[in-house]
Length: 383
Image 1 (tube, rainbow, N blue to C red):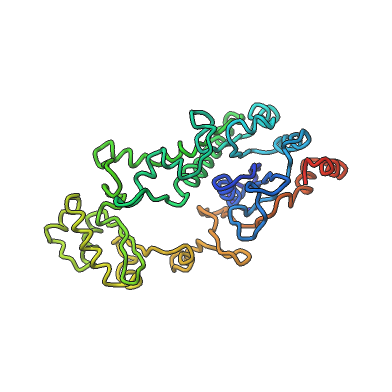
Image 2: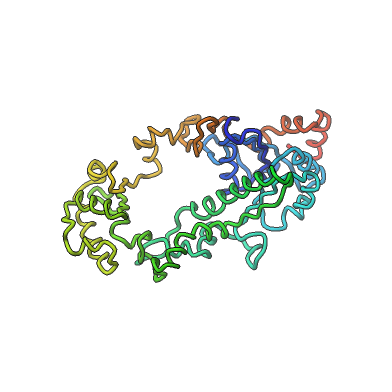
């Protein structure tokens, strides 16, 4: 593995969504990530499909942690690790005999990184939940969508991956930095709700200085309320995005739309009472041309414009092609490693593998003999 995290060893307790995404990012940047799968299939296990992007760049060992031999095997694996990631409900790892006290006793320098939806404590800590629930509780979901309809889930980007994966990674890297000074590991409690609340700091700040009305969706500058910051449908049924906030960008938008900047209504850019009529007028103009035509007119200018592309269209856009933002691996188009580094670029070096694909190899690396491996397999502790 190449990348700035080369030499970092991460043990990932197999999960779904934000946990695998966080470990994919770490492995893309050079960390050695070993995924601990269940010996039998299920929702928490990867099947090794080449297109399962979130599972790339990892080796897999299948351990039955419900057996004493399996627990002991995992503890032995953790002795040489830098990081453990797990996304079970609070208390599950403790019941398995793999809680922080036990693990850190075996490896005091380990970063024990835990990610849950609600956190390790609190009234909802043990309740089931998904991204949509976490962002609902934080105020984020209520602010996203159209005023004449219900809140719109922004995929699972804001909760799972934004408030979850990214904050888990920030916690891990921060703890690793602190360890370089203290020489000690610690527990990272990354709750998706905590992360999303943190992500909402900008809106909380706007509200604090009187720039955000909590009166419903499409009431503010960044929630689709403003005529200069929204999406508009074109004559071909496709959409474009406009984000002309700054006055100079706004003036250019009016010019490209053929509107006189001196018109009374459009000159009052920040007068919320005029946003409705101004938006209707812009919508009418945008509807006169196709998405491609507006792209030719506005893309690359300071209007702050981009066509709204589908997931399958995005890899074909000239800018994404030039940046090599997407790569083709084994016939599957997928995201390239990000961010980029001048000396130690990340890479995709392994296709996804199924549970237990590397069990023997990994066990040998931690000192298990062939006889020991055979015994572990006979007992059902590993596959």
